Amino acid sequence: MSAAVLDKAQHSTWSAAEMRGLVVSEFRKTLATSAWWALLIPGVVLAVGVLALRAREEYVAFSVASASAWASLFAVLFGAVCASAEYRHNTIATSYLSAANRPKLVAAKMTCAAVVGAIYGVVCAAAAVATVPLTGTAYGNEWPWILAVSAGAAVVFALWAVLGVGLGTLLRSQVGTVVCALLYVLLIEPIIGTVFSISGWDRVSDYLPDRSATLSLHGLTGGEQFGGQFGVATPWWLMLLVAAGYAAVFIVAGIAAAQRRDIA
Image (cartoon, rainbow, N blue to C red):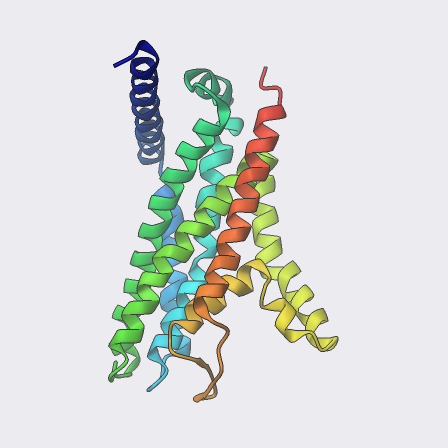
């Protein structure tokens, strides 16, 4: 084996080992704070509350999807806090110096956030499903769709946590990032959606970030339900790809900003 091949193999091994170390470090940072469970609790409460308000017979899977969609906001907030906390506590310079390059550190934060986000999705969906009997509603024969929605929630929450990392890396300010995320989801996107609806472009609003994630979960119920009636749903996989596209855009933008930013 030539020296060049050996050097390449050693570099690849070192690079993989470094990446594992960065990811482990991010998990340790996350578990050392209360942010991960402090944001999970209101997410679970919101999922349970939405489910309790909307659950009814032959509507359970759709109700779980709606509950999970609302709770996914906290996955975005977790990702934002995960990325912006180091800027707030002025530890980002040390973190960048410990990594071979900045994109690797962002990738490690993204990996950590995606795993925690997926856990958020599973827990929130499970809490919503467990609440169904308390509302006096029967699961019926909806288990295949309930399980599909729960699995989809894990993916959506992971993507939204990744988006939060990109947004937090881009803006740096923890408070500013959280406020921007809340304003967009609760105010700006609904206004944009209303404008599109008034203009007769209802389908365009389906491709907005929060709406696309919500529709990907609704699509896993076998069709969109309105007042107990089933209609034609936008393909869930297409909406999931749209949501993944938004997450990718924010991660790339965050990495680009981090590469150019002075951390001195």
